[in-house]
Image 1 (cartoon, one colour):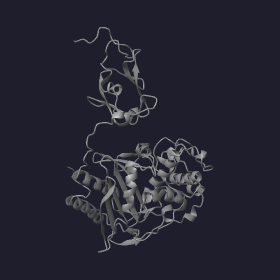
Image 2 (cartoon, helix red, strand yellow):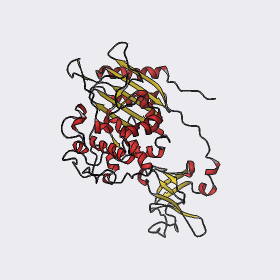
Image 3 (tube, helix red, strand yellow):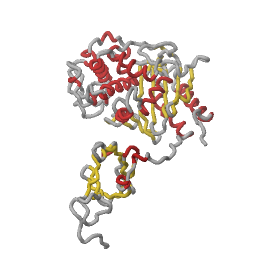
Image 4 (cartoon, one colour):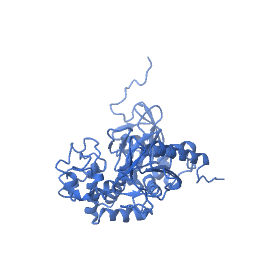
Length: 460
């Protein structure tokens, strides 16, 4: 017997709405929208407004600022997956004449290219794009501040370069690629470059008085790939599903997982985390969140996804500063995860085709020196090697067509694990990047580098 838990419990919904209400009140936001996605579906949205009877809903557009960067990163990853570029390619190979062509595409995605954080001249978010008609106007005379690859330095112009890269390689405007390759396949018809009613207006709230001032809404021009988009809580929920599990119509799960892996430290800030390929990575409340924050004059936004919990939290507000959307989006995930923890999938045996006696014979305890490890089978002939006692290096390995496995995470990412056999065909040991794992710790006659003392184990 099974029970459906598609809807949230009333107590959970009240806690979520209370969090949004506190955020709108304490953040002095004209309006605030929150939403939760669970297991691929929008299961809750709520809002508060300073105008009675005019609270926005999950279909109301807000400007999402730098959340746009994640969309641009997905477009770049699609080009990589199609073999049109490599992430280690220097920019100059595909986009000529920028003056920063030695920076790699991966470095631009992860903000480690050493480029300046902002454009020269006027505050680009509040000034006309006509002031920056060419890439040279976006980059200025001193586009680089440090050696590429030496550290994290957030760069808005870097994502302008990535948007121009998409246009150059794809042969269509960035906005057209975005629409046809991401928005239309995912059904995100309320995500646009310019506002489409119903949409919120952007406001600046006076820091020392309860009064407001409308903020301008500029077309960002070449800077659009860094922060142009307007979207809704419902549409961002659809995008969250892509970031959690991939979608073959847009980007494969393996490529999304690659985006979620740390590419560089996050630098200074009030949170502990790092940055992947177009995604911020955050550790909060004992869980890993992936997504992005966003802000433009009049708006702040955040989307966080907890892949392990199957949850996403979305927070949107229309004030230049004050509302803590990043904290709220994380809290929405925490509230649901704590109140209604995810049910694990039922245990099921592996498919018969994925198991044979040879694989089974490799499972169980292995020893690297005196460190004890366990090897167990996973789906599709994958294996997991994990410490049996204390701390150690745990890693997942994908089966290789030619035999053996390649590491997918942690210290052993990219390293090859193989079973080394004796002349009679029996397994002598496991070799993992030159580390030898044997069935017994320092057994005489085993293939232990340096050999084993012939006197064997002894007491004091």
